[in-house]
Image (cartoon, rainbow, N blue to C red; front, side, top):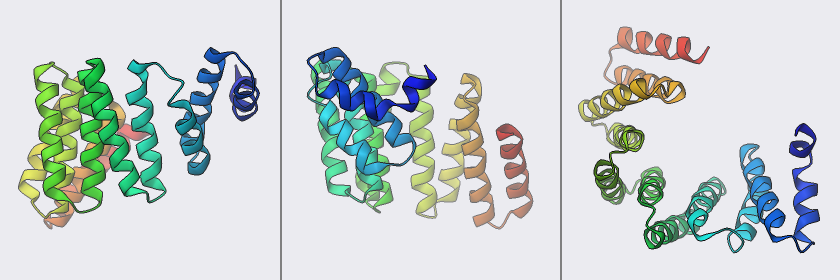
Length: 212
């Protein structure tokens, strides 16, 4: 297995030239995921774009969401937005509500980073409606986290803290340690911006303890 992981680019190239469609699909996607993880964004975008026609309909939205994140990192905001919107539509067509909601959330986060706050808020509302209807607690935790960041970026610290704390409660119940650590860091930033340095220190120390 370790040898396979070390040679994903070679295997993807090998199977791309062959006729084994299952292997071609598998290794093109795996090479794209690996390239994304090491921030080789151009390679990741190339692999994921080539993988899209190969993957099954129910997998396509997930690959699109990955591609959107890579395009963002390359500064391709318009292309990323179009990719997320395509992912929303693909997920809707195959009836995958969780994937549809997560694509709405990804689009919202991309819009927030560009300062398009009202557009981001609408996308988060759509994602939240789906996660609520489908009893997806992990999804609701994600939406609340992103709503906190949206409020914090606009200086709405009471709203940010309330959203972060609601997300924190869900993430703690689900045992999502990485997300809990991130939320504690976010709460520390809110406290710092409000001038409550003692609380900011407390939140950061809790975050560090979780991440050790």
